[in-house]
Amino acid sequence: MQNSLSNNLWKINQQLATVCLSHPFVQGIADGTLPHKSFAYYVGQDAFFLRAFARAYSIAAAKSPDWKIFDLFHTLAGGVKDELKLHQNYAAKWGVNLETITPGFSTRRYTDFLLATAWSNNIGAIAAAMTPCMRLYAFLGQQLATPEIPEHQYSEWIRTYSSQDFEHLTQKLEKVIDNYADNTQEAESIYCYAMLCERDFFQAAWEMGAEVRS
Image: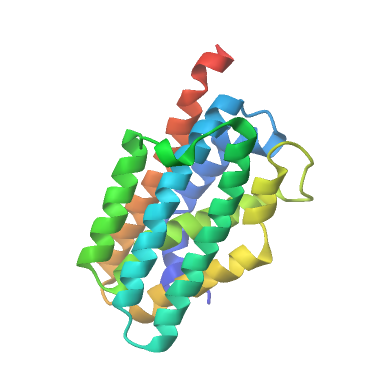
């Protein structure tokens, strides 16, 4: 819906989305040139993040006003498990132990914000904190898959986030914002902060590959 709250929030943050798309980390995924060190760090940090993301879905499910929304959040949590399978495949390929990951500053700041929001807010605000990750990744995947998905070491990442399945999950979460966010100004603040966390997450992973590029 063009005039929905979720769509308006995305439009407000379009500049940040463009910054993420043009970020050298994302462009390195686009053309397959991203150093392994950067991507390996990202895989570990994102796996840590996704586990917190799944917990936030569980908290939201516990706060759901009816069974339909409860079931929706569990479906969304199932999508996170699918993402984690992708990370596990990369981790196995490059020798990353996902059970011993120490979260970096950007990762910890993001997960702390996410879980604090989940514990202290209603499901509309929780969705406002979680949707930026979903919508941004759907946007990035779809952009990188145009006109077609390139074949290189990061093709599966692009394939996952450009898929219709991922887009549908994103839209389901956006509808929670539209139906349950009762404070537009609060939702805008939460959404924007999450987008900033996404940008900083990519930057942290990019910086980890600095030694390789120098």
